[in-house]
Amino acid sequence: MQAMTPDSISDLVAARSTEIIETRRQFHVIPELGFEENETAKAIADRLTAAGLEVETGIGKTGLVGVLKGAKPGPTLMIRADIDGLPVDELTGLDFASTNGRMHACGHDGHITMAVVAAEILAGLKDQLAGTLIFVFQPAEEIVMGALAMIDDGLFEKYPADRVIGTHLWNQIPTGTIGVNRATVFASADQFRLTVHGKGGHGAMPHTTIDPVAAIAEIISTAQTVVSREVPPNDMGVLTFGQIHGGSAPNVIADSVTVEGTVRAYTPETRIQIMQALERIAANVAAAMRASTSFERIHGAPPVINDPEVAAWVTQQASLVVGEGNAREWEPVSVGDDMAEFNDRVPGVYFLLGAAHDDETVAERGIEGHHNAKFDWSEDCLPLGVEVFVRSAVDYLS
Image (cartoon, rainbow, N blue to C red; front, side, top):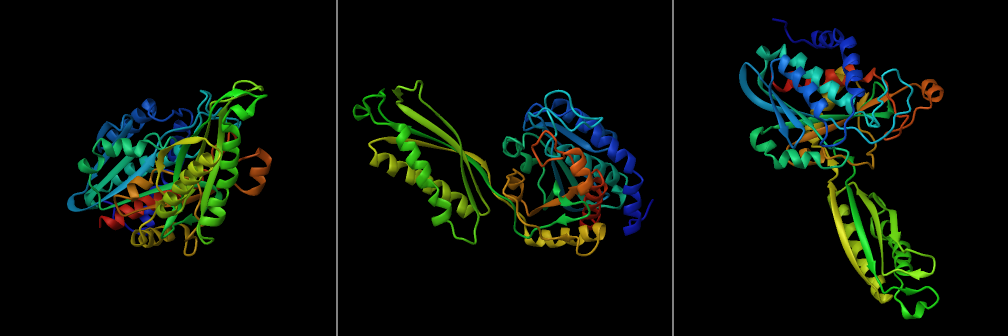
């Protein structure tokens, strides 16, 4: 039996360096959209089963869980990875680029890889572990529905955990740097649908109508004061109107106009505040212009907020991998992620794994950021993420 030492853990990961890259590329060529990750889930399940984990599939439609029990009783650590891709035609020019009109344009192929390989390594160490490891492979993160689907299927009732950790690789953070925040990592991500109801009529006789286009224009303009005048300057909020639908002809005043958009915030309080302010402004401005409104909030994800105690622990483990000072606080990012649903229920940490290519490679290949058809990242980050998972598990279950 191999003793678990800092050097031996590094050696176990290094011995799989080629396999880690191959695994990432195998998953990269089979991207699937949320709740359609059938081939992906089967490939994960096959690997976990072969490693000796107990596997349950079909949790939250296409999600799955792998359980690894140590030789002795002890605490339970959950490791979560998202598995879905995006509806993007890949333009990276990579030899292993996807060709099915889908793309792992947010690094989820890397997330899968790190969790799978960590599970395999830890399976070889199970006789030295005191406790249980639960590996959760979550579908449909990109449509912010997969976490709740798994939770509604009884994830935490079947697989209770004491701590949860996960990672999101980030190609705008240098490879070799790991961001571990003691509070907010990602913003909340909600959508809204606002309809202004007026009275249609002839474009040449606007006095006989109630023009919803004029009302929606005023609402959009006034709503710009929500963040600038209602959210404290030391807080963060985003209110974006992304779509406007209304009207059928140039000379027709429509009966109604609908706008859709998104709200982002770093705190639960600001998340609620912005939505309430928008609904209030819309109703009052519309009423002043003789129109009415209907407002629909489309639930997304809460902000991803790390537990400070777990963050301090993960920072310690990550520092053993990338060196003192290279695992540190990082600026929160205004994107959303339903890892928040895990952190809201179990003390947890979502750490940012630096995955940037060097500047010359970025310029030469025209590499872009997340959700872009030219998104790419350095595979050198993968062994680092695997090692953080393994070290964290070994330390917590020792």
